[in-house]
Length: 288
Image 1 (tube, rainbow, N blue to C red):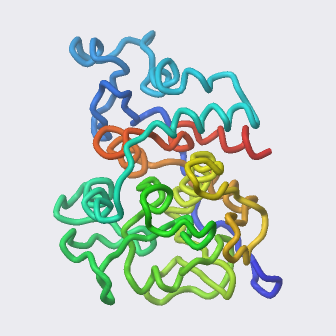
Image 2 (image 1 turned 120 degrees about the vertical axis):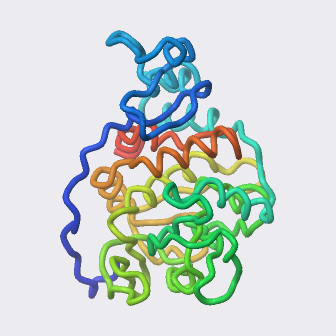
């Protein structure tokens, strides 16, 4: 954030969340309404799991994340990179239909929830006109110049439905606290070199950015994406401000919508996960 921009206190009380509560393992359907989630198919078939049963996240640790458990720092990052790089890749046209699944409004299945405004809007109003929704690259595609070709430019873990004009206002700015509030998106703030999303998705934004930093490390012909602790990164393959992203990750833990989105991507779209939704504490283990 530029020096003239005032910083503000966090405007929402800390959420109390248990990251394991609503995440399903590969063989179990994701659910947020049930009182308890089963960690295995047998537990699902036989009723509520007993007190000794593995939780869904523990079951993922036994399977999907088994090669990352016990690691920290660069070793953890490298292990997660290998795990999440095993994915189905989409074209940019396929992203439209993917977002209609991943960001579906749980209260109205004909709509999607827009990232920055939080507005529920018809799936059919996607496009490029004002008040329609389009495909926001949370890791701005100019930061590393990866465009919309298959790869980081089509990875739905960081692509979200957003209001066209709000997307334009965010542009390719880095993330930080401060700025002037957007009249079209209350709770969002911006200045000449950064953007601050509404409180309810601050952690989501942080975890999407850090997923990209782990997933894309210079292989596959694309740039090595890394967060840094500055703004105004321009076309460099970097996005800041890392210290603020880490704060947002801590203060806005994954909610049911974010967990469900991760599961839908895993089950139906790319078949890989954002590890920082399943394990938010891994952010501090990698970026110390």
